[in-house]
Image (cartoon, rainbow, N blue to C red):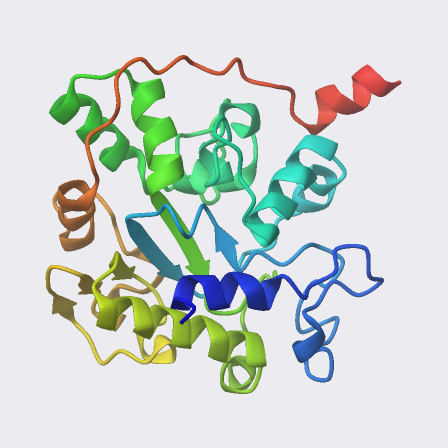
Length: 267
């Protein structure tokens, strides 16, 4: 019998990244440009779902003016497609916002470390405390800890399509892909296969919250977008406890170029 993880990966295997409208075929009748940005690849999973020890739940990918330029970067787009197909290699950073090659992406400032120069928007660095906690706990470099987190934490979006604001919340109960994400997460909680951390839109995910247990952390809905994963938070503490030790002998990957440099190289 196929696992919930395998079923979800198989479901997204039906998505075509070369179609004019970048939606899962099951969502085609409901997902519309304007409600979502369908010129960008969906991102139902950010990370290696099979290998991840921790799954963080989010509402849907945001939308930044820089996203369009980044998707024209062949290396970044290839990483997005690997996430859709879940065919990561041993040297990949499946949680791609932790990849040293993409440190200037808006998502890197939100999840990893502040970009240079630091932008005021979305620079929440949500996983920075966890990475630094691994450095201290396991006696490894920050590069090794970040690579480990990139493989052992995955982000699952309830709705896979980008938008500035989720103003069509009614679609969260109608889009087939949202139902699949919800079913995946509840199966993971039931099986205790992974630690599930619900930080945002907990009621839409089907949780009453708040909860703190060995395999589920649900934040109070009052925290909303500001939900922290610091080591003083329930989620941050649980993540650090759940993550396996960082293997020694890690070799740092030399950061690649962002979209502007890549474009200059092609000129």
